[in-house]
Length: 533
Ligand code: GLN
View (cartoon, helix red, strand yellow):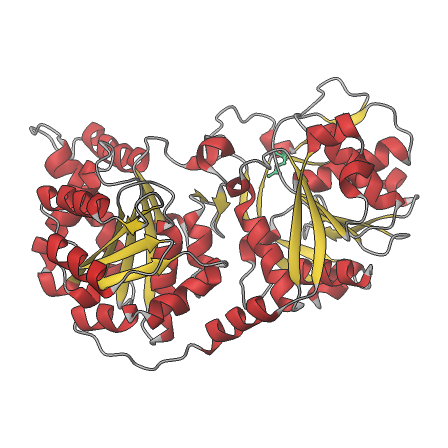
């Protein structure tokens, strides 16, 4: 059978959860034994989100092959069995870059290079890439942005053409829309959905299925009205009601019959049906009563998307321990002004996440000192590990003004320094130490116990590292270098000898955690927090 293609578009407003919807569609199809992949098309001109501020774009997700990608790829990997790569995230920047490179090479000699057909052809080539290359039943392509944006037009034009190119029986358009509840009228309103579908129809796309985000249940009448005005079957108006946990979405879609409708419309038969994994996850989320409070001390706490994978991994750690998580997001700068006690008294675990730039560093260092001195389980990630090194250098080794050379070029003790192979790098895009690298855990360490093995592979995104000139000095004072790169030159993991649970990693374990298979570091961190009592 030929590969089938599902396109997911969004209308009315942004932030409706197109990424979670696409991931949930992928998850549902996997429960039916369908082999899928998911990819994201982002209409912005940056080549990738790696150079963007998290305030603009949320977290930068990193795949095994070192691609700096949209955070939706995190949802795709967490919800499914996929391990994605550079082929799974396409931007206007990448697409134009390819076309312009070809133009300079003379591939279009004699022709005027235009949005249609050259840009749209490149988009279509990328859509079809997985179908052609691998043995995949369904390729799900999420189109970023909202229908009506100027930037997304070439993508919508390309997906319109795609159906004509490969045959209507192989393509399905799913549109995510909003059905707002107007309190004053006590009514759900369908007009915004009608308008956004009309906008798609003007471009030549007739959605096959509508996913309707709503606070209240859609009555039969409302469904019938949407179906009539939007030209879709009534059973293809799918209610996507607000749920407490994103991991409820696949089962909710299943109850609405979405999997059956998709397969029917694509002329496919389910190979099996196995929803057990999702039933187990949702059951634990709904029945866990005991609470554990974890503080995350960062600088983007008013924008949780910046720490998306970390907050999801904490949830996974909670599921693994059958406990409800109460995550306290602490602003590192406020911690400096008001003192650590105000925010950290009573918390059972402290996590300091990754980041760039010196804002908030002092507060993160204070939080780590608090965790170290009060025997509170501490988990540092990337910049969080670097801050743990700075804290130890300052407060235990008494190395005055110890710092990372990222924050103080003239520090007399640059305990964190630029990696050797970063010294001559000028370009900012895609030049960090990126992607999966091996790390060897020292036998008998906490790290070794947590993973249950010595050979680890984790994803990285950093330019700075522990400065080896200080290794001996640290080692003499209960500081353990428990994880090193295979050539022993890069410090990957540190821990403390005289503390119940203190571990910090240079890599990003949060990119490899799943709801049904929590990353061991998150699982054990939550366990240690629970044991704190
Ligand atoms: N800014 C630090 C570095 O580049 C940490 C990076 C991170 O936390 N991802 O090394």
